[in-house]
Image: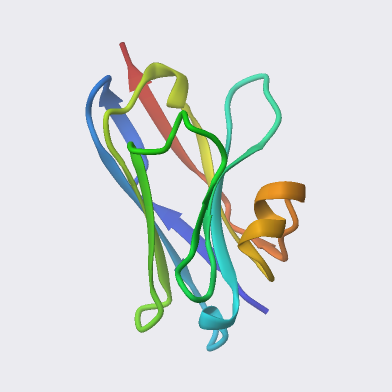
Length: 124
């Protein structure tokens, strides 16, 4: 069993930055791929980016490439999402997830565990 707790969300102006953190409980963190999803008001939850157990990154699409960076610290059981050059369309609840494969997470949304989410609001 893995429990995920996100933090770091908040309100930021367009062009600003935020770093989200996701702390995982348990001793099996390094055996999971980790990812971030987001859900904007009135929209379905969507995949953003994931990182494999070995550190290979899978992005959803070009809209976040070059702006969002995912990283993981297996010693701290934590995954991070550095978000730069934020845009109003990035406003959403951001969810951390753990699963068996970063690619499966990105392609079919396959996950085993979810965090409770953290709100990110970008004002124009």
